[in-house]
Image (cartoon, rainbow, N blue to C red; front, side, top):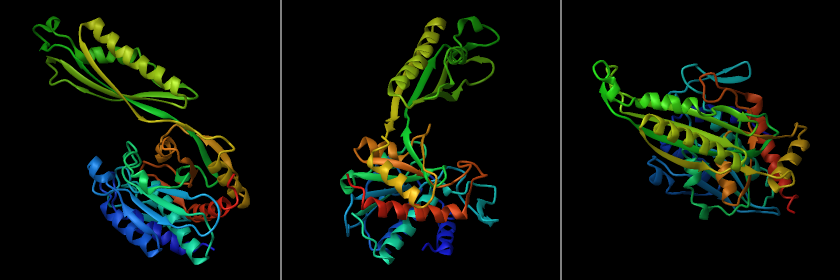
Length: 374
């Protein structure tokens, strides 16, 4: 039922459109046209203006023709860097970049699956309870599109986000919350060769603080990281200021709070030890979610996988996605695997067979949703 050439051609078209985070105008305009050509009512919200991007989230709506809940299908339009000038290469049933950029299967493979399914629904007069599409901006690095989406334009109680590197049939039912931890440590400048004893070395304070932290894999549910450290003016000046940035994530809210508190405590105690001052600021970037096995999106996705002979894997992940925000808004949302590999690297690739299966799987999800409503 799927048109293999059409799917591959559309994927190749989309990945060659530059759309790094905050620069989604060109792809947004194309997707607006594609959705309208498919008969959807389309709106663009104000998210871009709120976050300083070129475009807002694109929301499409196809009224229901049958039973079942309204479903929202989501994929993000942006990519990470290096994502400009992508030159896709089709080789041995794989699609990869020329090697100088990412490919952009994250998340244009998800977009292509949604577009193909909308065509199949219209062409085959498939009954459904209503379909809504959310193509979000600036997912990478902060879920800013989903956070600022106009939820007045979304009525669906159930959602599917096509944005996981698992094979089709993979259902992400649990994802962590994340805290950002930032600190400015203020010491005292002095000449490093003449009177270093009069200074307070802010970099030394930061190093001591980091050495006291638990960083990396904390347990099976929790991770933490210090990712950025910057400061100092010259090698002959005792540095009076340094900035450090890190994160804490956990599938358990309690564990995430404890990990964040431990990292902040290490910074504050290090500052006291050396007579420095630490300004510490934390922010919860997104909440966790945990979908039950009998929740509606999991039941729908699992039955659809079985119908296609796919292995249905219920998994947890250490990464956040638009689904974290959707679930926090009361939209029961699962992330489904779309087969993209080595994402966020110049070695990223996807199999053409997975591009086709993604559409088949999502199409089956829509058909199953008509029957599973309780």
